[in-house]
Image (cartoon, rainbow, N blue to C red; front, side, top):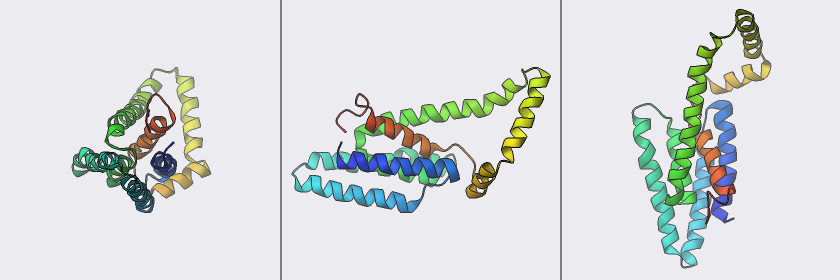
Length: 181
């Protein structure tokens, strides 16, 4: 595993935890990832591999350009866009499409669950509906969930950066997906 792939893996773990818990993508971690990528790319350049360096720089630009319109119309947070650009810098242009497709599939499944489960609940027999309502009420009052809601500070939405992170983990760790990483 290359230095940049390892850095992408470590950054993705941190981003997934932060986005799932607090719906935040910390700029400090993105800057650290970009700084590490710059060092790795400098090493590639000094080793005489400029074609690889340009693939990574194109990946950063493509990652930014691909998701920026979704941020501008309010469908995505800026952290998601910046994280995708850093992933492009770390993994190169060739990794962006599979990572984006994997993350989009996970986000789609998330939407189906959020939209579909309440509708399925109406199909349950009344005693099961009441049991589910009591369980949901107890869950909402659980201290861990209350603390997580406080950490989110009202931020809602799909944790797309976490889904990008999961797809990145698959790309880096699954040899068939990330061949050459």
